[in-house]
Amino acid sequence: DGGITQSPKYLFRKEGQNVTLSCEQNLNHDAMYWYRQDPGQGLRLIYYSQIVNDFQKGDIAEGYSVSREKKESFPLTVTSAQKNPTAFYLCASSIVVSNQPQHFGDGTRLSIL
Amino acid sequence: GENVEQHPSTLSVQEGDSAVIKCTYSDSASNYFPWYKQELGKRPQLIIDIRSNVGEKKDQRIAVTLNKTAKHFSLHITETQPEDSAVYFCAAFLTGNQFYFGTGTSLTVIP
Image (tube, rainbow over all chains, first blue to last red; front, side, top):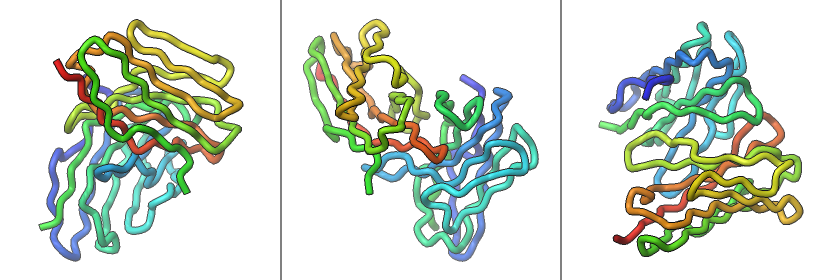
């Protein structure tokens, strides 16, 4: 099912390299989120955005950066400052940042070469 | 510390039996509690949710109960089937515009 598209599905990073994960949604949602999922742990919030050109740090923002130039797009850059980037990354969106259901993408699995 | 705690971390049941997963939360101002099902390598999918003005909600074989006084909520799956096998996550919308997720329960339904 569509709605939120994440790419690529798998990504490999070399030491010292920045990589960017793509997230696009066609649900006309104002709010978008990035989560990191590690084995045995719940989803942890990296960044979220309530509207275009605005974003807020989550609990684990260090070593990551985002932009929100268009309503449909919320790319996540994993910088070289993130020393343990191997994880499953999930993008989500909701109508607004509030008590509303979140819809998730299929995720990107990032590994270190 | 943990804002949402989830138990058990793994659960095995015989097909046809019931499964119960429990979560507790810390912020009494929380007002929205969704449950997600995630199959291996796939996206989490919302299966049921409940708001703080409701004590129980049912959708076919799935139900969620909320005890605001004790600050816990539970997922109940009846007449379990093999296709119910997955990881289930609870979440709570807390003040500060964030959802906090539990650590997940891996449910296995044994045929």
